[in-house]
Image (cartoon, rainbow, N blue to C red; front, side, top):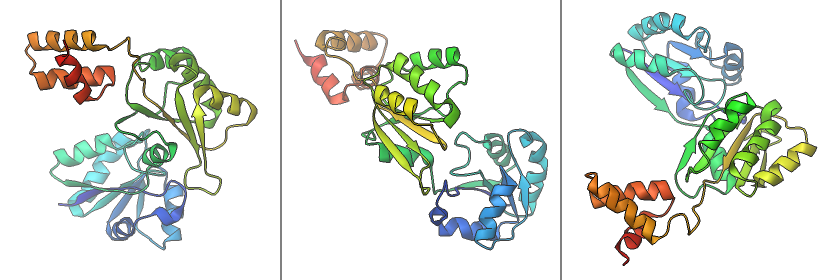
Length: 273
């Protein structure tokens, strides 16, 4: 029984390819690649000649049988165009089918645009929510963003350069122009750029500068105002949840998530007279 290895590949700089990833790419019997042309360039650079098969959004169901047959004979690697497989890329169905067939699945970590942008942005203070690509149509995108307006966690999303200006405009209108944010372009590549500011200043910048390269956006989470979550509201929320059957700890945790306040502060506010 073979193992399916989910191998991260560089998002730009080839030096970010891990030693473990290189070893496995040279040892597996087959590599399933989102774009065989791009993966062949990577393999050629490192002088690896393992057979390739395409596996992408449009043929993923048709490829399952072939890949499971290869796993019955040995190990298989799954790679995407760049970065970590399954992060806004196909592969979930393959992992599920592999596990259902009794094979092992192992992740081989490496480059990630999500994490690279998050830690470069200056906004990685705690929890974050990864959103993938936003809807392409403005009306749908605005509804989607408005549903996230009170999300307390840092937001991370991808966007294509030709939609960046429209996306930033909708972000400003939905979340507020003063929301801290960063646009990270061409990460790990020669022309890498991390622009930090707020949504209004970033929108102005790209109104004057043509967006180029794939972009990862990092946006600070919403911060509650004192009037939104004062001691009285916190106490009422905790008491209501306790009546519904939650423990004090569970109630405080949920109120902390809803308000964006630290859990210990919620405890203190709930005890205030």
